[in-house]
Image 1 (cartoon, rainbow, N blue to C red):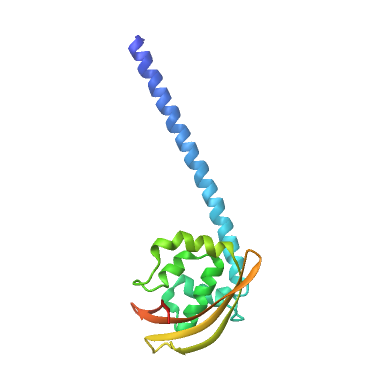
Image 2 (cartoon, rainbow, N blue to C red):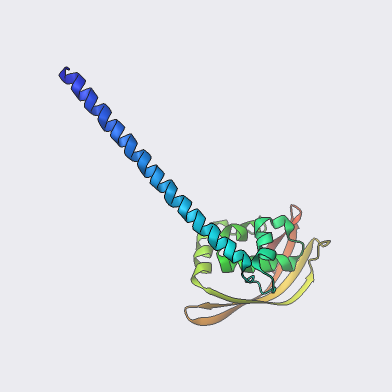
Length: 176
């Protein structure tokens, strides 16, 4: 074999080895991802049996999980408020964004909101008052207190929120 042929053959072996290593790494990454997905499913299936964080005395699977899986299933402004509190408690940023009105949605602050929701311990939700916001209404308000612990201190968010229907389902518009 000529010198040129040996070099070419060596280059082909190097390319082949590189491709094999890339494929092995990809398979390892896929296995790791599958393990992570399986763990997440197990946690999620257990979560569905736990009490819902919103304080409704229902299981998460029979309460806010329904909204988190399909926002169009939310029939009242209070139900949306409860599901948003639960999304904060669980760090479900996708639901928080999709349940926020498109004109007031804080898209740029998503990472900051997610980091904050995960840095606090959510204690309870207290619904103080709601007006309108039934299935037949197009707007409503909910006054609530969300109790949480941050850096060892118990704190409260007390807000009177406005909800409206956008694209046929309830969304959070902002503070009244």
